[in-house]
Length: 404
Image 1 (cartoon, rainbow, N blue to C red):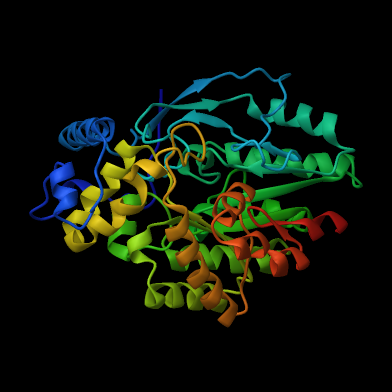
Image 2: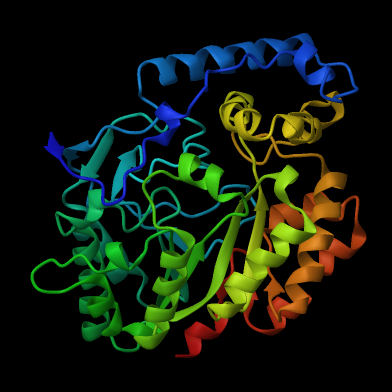
């Protein structure tokens, strides 16, 4: 096992004054304006979620251990196609150099369904696997997504040079095949303190600059109060740092004008909070967002609710209401990730679109979300008309990058 240190670790989730886990019961929710019957199966899941969270809190295991295991992958195996929902683009391959947990430690993790305290495995021969894939696919118009399953520039990948070597593998590919149709899509919560870590004399910015026109970097910034962000995203850059990363990427010739606007916690999507968010993004040169509402197993919804209850107990009912109604329990995005009520999402999405447009920001959207919400709000089916005209698709993939 190899140990690593976290640049900006926050352990506030264990040290909140007067905080203790709260049981989320049907009786509690119905006292907070959840005015529909809650099925017995859901009651059982709420109870299991509380017990799971209370154990993690008691054992101080809400965030991953600061160590990883070195393992090997099959270098001849093709990378996984990025297709969570069955209707995702088929021309996207995932670059995932580690498995298990992610050092970022986001407690709402959309990938691990709350299993973010598992051990971390680093695939030490991953660059060989990536090189082989690039060789096979050099003639295809295809994105390599680094990384949908982990923070691309977490400490697990930085201090040992894995992230640097992945980017160097891309550089070597384009040096060998200048006309390769491959492009790189990166989503990150990293700040300059992450991108600036050096390995063999180079930082991530330096390496990306060599093939800047082949790369798109998207920031990842949800809408939530800072006090929740400090708890739920313990080991990532603050918003100012993430915006500075995008600006520095553009200075280096990298396409960096879009943001994954996720997760969205419904009680905090007010006109005031969305306006502040769009203003921040606009000032940083962001031109497009891809919004996504919080989807999770019920037990992970219970986890997030612990902190909403601590800071904003009056919002607990509003937080749970769109999820647990019997008619919504089949609204599953993938695996067992429950999505909120379609009509509530449509209402909030309309507000997001309205305010984004005031700042000249377009909205691209996941095809699954467009289909689901478009079923109750016809206008959602064309919400990405303007973004598509500007080259953005789905997660915010910039299709014009293929002409570079």
